[in-house]
Length: 175
Image 1 (cartoon, rainbow, N blue to C red):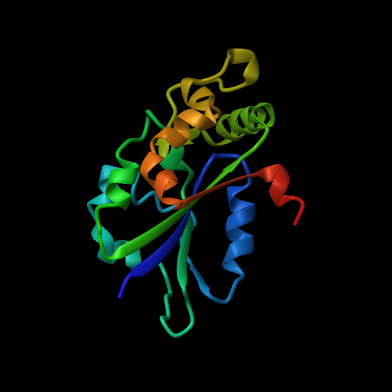
Image 2: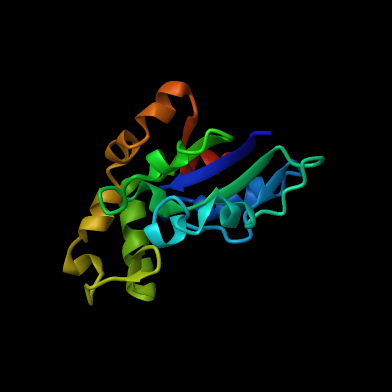
């Protein structure tokens, strides 16, 4: 039986948590125990394998239609790569992607505040910059994440197949 995954791929600071929390309430969705597992993004997590990944979900085939996770690291190219290749590697898996965006200026401001507070821009890696305030200039990661079309280029096959849905935080707020 094919396992179906709905994966929110970003962009960081664009409402991924809000969207994840809303979708996780649906009775036919099994949300990941860890919102951002980063399974398809990092070698050290990918090496744990699909058995590990599947264990992140309390999936009951009599109740659930979809597994759900939200890892913004999946759309942090060129700093994270091979995400779509990994996603499409397992033929017994069906993946639908959701890419949520936000007004880029608001996203950049929120990103800078987040990294200034947490010290992390990509996964669990600590940033080498000591100052992420906007006065210190945009980091390369912050700028790249806001180039939405470039981020989506990594998922061209999913787009062509109709397996990627885009929306904005502003649209989400309408609901």
